[in-house]
Length: 461
Ligand code: 5GP
Ligand code: SF4
Ligand code: MG
Image (cartoon, rainbow, N blue to C red):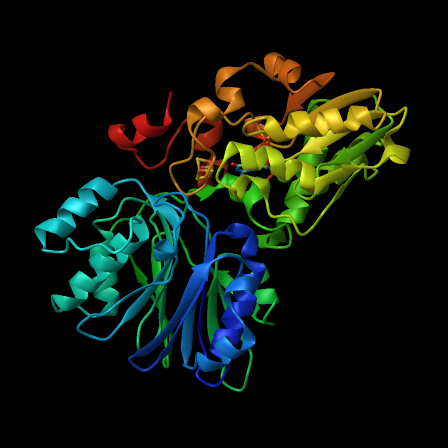
């Protein structure tokens, strides 16, 4: 999911949030929503569909206020229904709150019980996100202020969360103790500088905000008329940013650790070329996610880079659509091979990841039909062997091709002449950061946040 928040009384906050969400559309294409606050009055509009389908200009003009919270959703828990769209808006003793959540809790059963014990049993939706909102509202109703109430509520929540919470006075930004999902702070340099919160820096760029820093793992910031105040959550833990954000999920123009992910992805492509060199006539990437690594691969190997597949940019990311049938259908609508580039050529094709293997096989077939004589696939991440419980929909373990098959068997299944993946070491060393500061559980099963057995059983084979 994508989350966004802005505190700027003199600006058109709904419109700025709309543009922020537009830049975060890749993080969720199922539903979109914005809530604006004018004092204790909330205007919330949310619905199924893309940001551009859910909002019209007239609607945004009606949504007045001094601050806003926005969300683009991609469902990892709770089914794909309109009621599950966010922000979740709830009344409290201190006025309404509006909550936007990116991530996934692993203790929803206990949380539901804890809330039931307090008399909170009527949930409108089926999401963990609504439960967080209910927990915060409950703490506030029992006498705490917004910051204390949020910190107290989050002691009940285990899992991954980057939240933006709107209140009548300001916006709260908070990341779980491990900081699994990203959240950044930006500033709009107007007459009075105003703060912005967003999942990724690309959402700051689109509204002309300057990147300041990330919200730290386990940090809560409250942004109001008096500026930004930082607090710590009760629990502290080692930083564990999701490495899949680096590899695939975040946009390449977003900045993590002071460089764009485009640069990181080029670097892992170079590393991949060294780890698994092979002779060929051209290197190409699977658009769009495989392209930066393919360029890096070409630069390091000296094999010319070419475009062999043209993507229809108006078809959404195939993996976000819920069914296998739709997924398989999606790929044909999406990528078209260039015969004149491919005919008679030995091709290296680079992609960011293989999850189920269905996309890859279709692409390989398409390249051969277009005349490629050899197809060598190189993947700029290690084999995905474990499901994610923290908010990326990498499916149940039995759907993951690398959980069932060896690399040689996968090569046979997807019909390539050779297949190689980037090493785990390569993936992590190329970040330039302390390698222990990342979650890479989908590549090695080492889950940084303990996943209860009942939850594990739902996705592991
Ligand atoms: P596959 O070969 O597994 O069907 O698809 C792999 C390609 O789709 C890669 O290009 C990757 O970018 C994208 N992809 C497909 N499914 C998922 C998924 O569930 N999660 C992520 N992160 N990427 C996916
Ligand atoms: Fe990211 Fe994988 Fe960890 Fe999930 S398991 S948070 S996708 S690195
Ligand atoms: Mg891709």
